[in-house]
Image 1 (tube, each protein chain N blue to C red):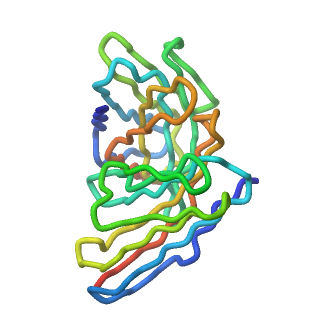
Image 2: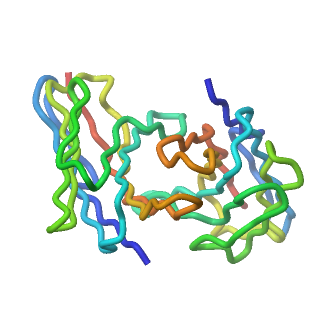
Length: 113
Length: 114
């Protein structure tokens, strides 16, 4: 089975801290994504990566950056965490040519105090 | 860009009844429509999908219908069971090879009452 692993299930940080959310997939997928999930707003795309060292902005990239140094790992970085970044963060991966094979991790619930 | 609207936001049904969730999309270029189920504490998982060259697809108790002219698609769950309780997301994408953005609906929380 495809596995997308997010390093933390729950995370509590203080305003202004630099926060790293890590995601690892074990199926050699080219595409990786970071989504944010908020009640009533669904899943909103923050950043995605076509392949190693490639990244593209999604719909809500402000306040975030990403890093993809290795194919299996995609990191989301909150440069200076703010309370409005309190949310559920979901990582996903997919092979380049298969839209039906989008696999999600279990999510990281981030609280910024 | 694509805009996907999903209704209702919450839905309660008695066990054994049917449930219907509806979505509309705006971009006529969208041609792939997946549905995801998110159980508590887990990430969304694909449960069924439909492509624009098909009007209906069925998999046991779940089915999806697509009306390209009206730009809407629906998820139908028959003989609902308590394990169907979850949040369901529809999505649309103009898939043509390479990366294409997936736009999700806002989600429907389905509660099946035993």
